[in-house]
Image (cartoon, rainbow, N blue to C red; front, side, top):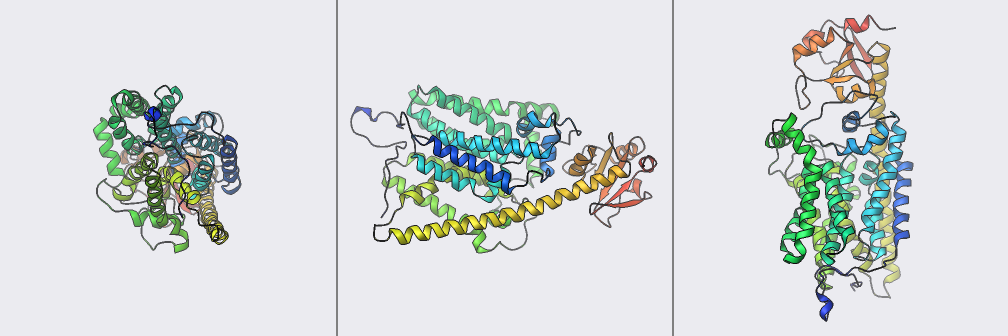
Length: 500
C-alpha cells in the first residue's frame, strides 16, 4: 500500500490557530551529513568518470575565451550569456590548464548540489532529499556536464534552490535567508541562461501573485529583483551590440532554428544515447534499456502528485512538477533540435518527487523482500545503463577534442602562431586550441566579410580549415593544402614562409 510520511507541504491542513503559515519548516532538521555525502560522492564520480583532461568543447571554448588570458575571445552570439565566463574566470584568467578547470568545476558543482538540497531540509525528510540528490547526480547527463563550462547544470541547481527558498519564504516572512536564497538563485539562473530562468520561475511568479497580500510582496519582489539583476548585463549588451532587446531575442530565435510550435520529444529521446547535440536529429531511438527511465519519469511525477494529494499536502510537489514542466516546455515543444543538457533543470526539479515515490510507495510486510530485491535490481540496471552511456560519450568527446588539439599542433608547425587568424570548418574550437582569432563571413558566428578575410590573410598568419576534400574560398584556391587532425588546412603563403 502507499504510505505517506509526515512531510509538511504548502497547503497542509492543521488544527488550531497555528494553521496560518502555508509551509511549516522544522527548526533543527537533521541529515546535513547525508546530503554532504551525496555531494562529495557526486564530485568524486565526476573526477573518476569524466576525464579531467578531456579538453574543452565548442561551446566551452566560446565561454572560456571571453576571460582567458591565453586565447582571443571568440564571437559571442545572441543566445549566449556571460554567466559561465564569470564562473570560470577565477581559473581561466591565469591558467590554461583544462585539468585544473575541470577539477574546479567538479568541486563547485558538488558544493552547489549540496546547497540546493540543503534548502529543502524541513520541507522533505533528509532521506528523501539524499535519494533525490543521488538520483539526479547519477544520471549520465548530470555527471557529464557537471565539470563542464556550460550553463545548464547551474540553471538546474539554481531552479531547485529557488523553488525551495520560495516555499520557505512563503512559510515564514521573517526568514531572511530564504529571501536571499530566492534572489541569489534567480540571479544565478539568469546570469547563465536568461530565457531558461524565466521559464523555470514562471510558476513561482504566478504563485507569488496568488498568495495573500501580506505574504506575496517580499517573495515576489525579491524574485523579480533577482531575475533583473542577473539579466541586466544581458539586456544592456543587447542594446550595446545587438540592436536592442527585441532584436537580440529575434536573433537568438533564428540561431535556434526559429522558436515556434515544434514537437521535439522524440528528438530529445534520440539524444539520450550520448549525442551531445542532435541537430539535425535523425536516426532511430536508442535501445529501450537506455530510454526506459526517461519515459518512466512523467509517470513517476504523476504518481508523486497522487501521493501528495492523498496526504493533503500537494502544493510543494505540484510546484516542483509544474516548474519542471515549464522549464522543459520550450525544449520539448518549441525547437527543432535537441541536446540532453537542455532538460537538466527539469531533471533536478523532478528528482524530489521521484525520490518520494521510491521511498514512500512501500509494499506490505509479506511482499517487502521481493519488492526491495526488484527495486534494487532495477536501480542497479539503471546505474549500469547510465555508466555505459557516460563512458561512451566521454570516449567519443575526448577523441573529438584530441582531433582539434592535433589540428592546432600541425598549424603551429606550419607557422600559424599568435597573433593569427583562422576561418572555415570548426574554426572556433580549433582557433582556441591554436590561440588564434576565429573569423567567419557567414553563418551564426559571422564577424567579418569575405574581403576582410582576404585582407587578413595578407597581414597576419592565416589559415582556412575545411572538411577533407572540400574546396577553400576563392582567395585561398592556390594555397597548398595540408592534412591536420582529420581536417584540411590551407595556410596563406605569408604564413608558410614563416614556418620552421
